Image (cartoon, rainbow, N blue to C red; front, side):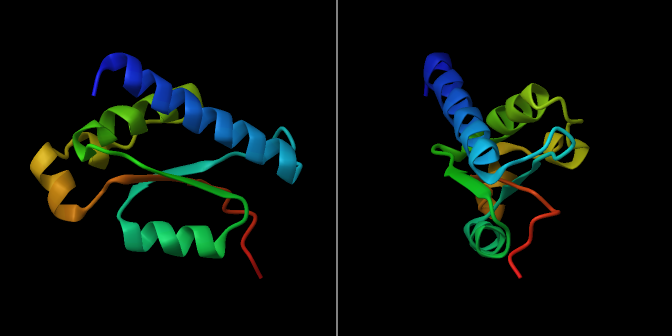
Length: 108
């Protein structure tokens, strides 16, 4: 995947976040929780929080780069545990989804 494609994926995900925030009436103090997850955890988060935005990252070796770029654009601190993962660990753990959700908006 080229740098241009990666930048497109990042921009598309941020666009989806912005639209979801606007449609859900986020106020200025509400923030997104962003996680790099496997498929099972992604399904759980999407099921339990509204709004939630999820995207599959193919190939998974771009996962950390995309995750860090999104966290940076949202002005959130980077996750040091994710930074330590190599390509083999990401593949082994199945971390090929990025999910954003709001902890204050669970589905009841």
